[in-house]
Length: 230
Image (cartoon, rainbow, N blue to C red):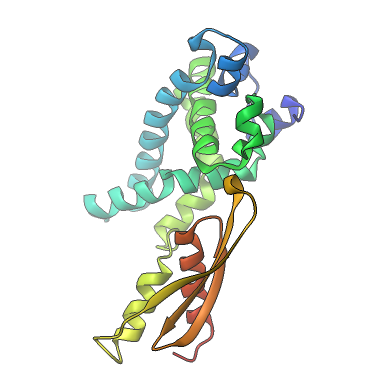
């Protein structure tokens, strides 16, 4: 594990109560393995952080998008705070390398799992709120999610390449049938990489790889769109 002082430098916050930081970084697998009290894992702090990340991001979007209707604000907030987005922000500060984790969870790739990274991100925010108040929590949230919020405002945060490809192809043929075929799987069961090809009428339009079939399909559709010959 990395030195937690490096993490504090990355988030720009210094804890008054350092036990809260350890609490935020303690996964339930670690507390179970070491027979620690339930309150010493990060699930309760995650509960607080989850709610406040939603509130802080929503307030920021409200201030930036002054004429946006409620539905657009809700969609953009959902895009920013969804698991994949928070996990990506967590990777930006190497959060997985600071988590106290049980040996079994670590052996199955726990430090790179979106669910664990996103939950720990929220727990870290919860710990900051308890330690330094809501304003301190908001400052860290907006700092770490600044780029995600910017992309959401620009409509670029969640690119659904499969839908884009389908719409593009349907411009020429409303009855077009698009198929995504998994052509290979590699790696151990807990950390597989899938490769998918997208085709119509037996013609391959693009291919892509990802840690799940859905992500590989998105990459395949993105590849097909990038080729510019549809």
